[in-house]
Length: 407
Length: 159
Image 1: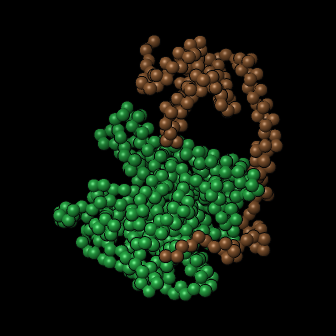
Image 2: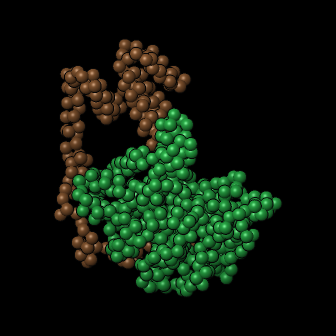
C-alpha cells in the first residue's frame, strides 16, 4: 500500500481538433494548436485595440516555453500567431515541445478552475490517452521527455508552469507534483467510462468507434484489453465530410461560391444546414450532408464488419458497440443502422447493442477524457488498497471557443 | 448534335496514348471501360484521399502488361461493367460473358463453402434469442473489472 494522500486523478487527451483535460466535475477544452507570440510591442498594441469582453484565461492563454525561452500562444489565442502548429497530425504527435506545452496549458487551466472551488491541483495522478498509431514506445519516450523537464525536490517531481493572460497581462506561476501516469489507447477511455457506469464494473467485449475532426479510430476491446492488431486510426473524419460539402457547393455553383469548411462545421451541432450566400440567397446543404454522412458511415461499417469477421475467427464476439467523438452527433444513427443491417438486427436489438454516450450523461466529445480520469482514479484507489469510486458527473465545461448555447 | 469535350490533363493523356499504342484493336470499348473505372476511382479517391492518377496508372499498367485481372473481384467488376453497358444498350447478355460470370460465381461458391462466409453465417445472430443481454449472464460467470485489474495492471509510469 502506498500513501496517496492528496493525490487527485486528472484525465487528458490530445485530439486532432481539441485537447481535453478533466478533474472531478470540471473539464477544460481548447483547440489543439500552439503558435508563436507577438512581440512585446505588438502585443501591447493589440491589448489597446482589443475590444473583446472575453478576458478568460482559456481564451487568452500564453505559456512560457523554457526550451525556446519565449512565450507561446495556446488554443484560441493562436488567432494572433503568424505561425501555428497543431499538436497532432493524422493521429500522431508532431513535436514533443508543443505536446508538452499542451499538457502544461491543460493542467494550468484545470488548476485555475479547481482553485475557484478551493481544490487546487497539488499532487496529480495523470491518466493519458495515447494515439493508436504511436504505440507504447513512443509515448514512453514522450513521458521520459516530460520527466527530464520536471524539478526534483525531496524525491518528488514537480512541473512548473508559467502562464500569461495576454488580454489582461496577468502572469501566474504554479507548481504541480506529478506523481504517476497511466496510459491507454485513446478510445479505451470511452470503454472505461462505460465500464464504470453502464456495465457496473462487469467486463463486456466492446467495440469503440471514435470519430474526430481529422481522424477516426476503431478499437475493439476483448476481455478488458484493446486488440492492438485490429485497432487503427484512419485519416478521415468530420473534416472529410465538410471538405467534400464545400467542394460540392463550389462545383455545383459553377465555381462561384467557396464556403469555408468552418462555416459548415459550426452549423452541424445545431442541425442547421442552411447557409446564407451573400447576394445569392440561402443554400441548404442538408441533402449533400446526408449523402456524405451515409458514404462515410458505410465505409466505417465495412471496416467494422471486417474486424468482426476477424474476431469471430479467433472465437471472440463483440457484445456492445459505441460511437464517440465530435462526429458521433452526426454519424451515430447512420453507423448504428449500417451495422444493424449487417447483422440483420431489428431496431430493438440494435438499441440494445449500441451504447449512446449521451445516455450516460456525458458528451461523446469528452467521454474518453473522463475515462482516463477514471483510470487514474482507479490506480490511486488500487495503490491505496481502497475501492474506486465509479461515479462521474461533468458539470463544469470550460472551452476556449464558446458554444452556441454559451453565447 | 452539340459537340462535347473531355478535358484531360497531360499525364492522363500520355497514359491514354500509351494504352492505344499497345492495344489498337479494342481501344474504343476498353477505353470506355477504363474511363468509367477512372471516374469511379476519382469519386472513391475524394473520400479516401488517395491519388486517382496513381491508381489509374497502375490500372493501365496492368492492362498494358496483359494482367488485367489481379483478383477475382477485378474480373467480376469488369464483367459487371460490360453487362451494365449491354443492358443500357438494350441488348441481351452475350453468351460468353454469361458463361464466364456463371463460372466465376460457382468458383466463389466453392471457395466459400466452409470458408469465411460460412463462419460469418454461423456467427451472425439471426434472432434476439442468440444475443447476449446485459445481466443475462450471471455475475458469477462474468468477469469483474476489480478482479481483472488486480491480475493485470494498467501501464503505469512513475514520474
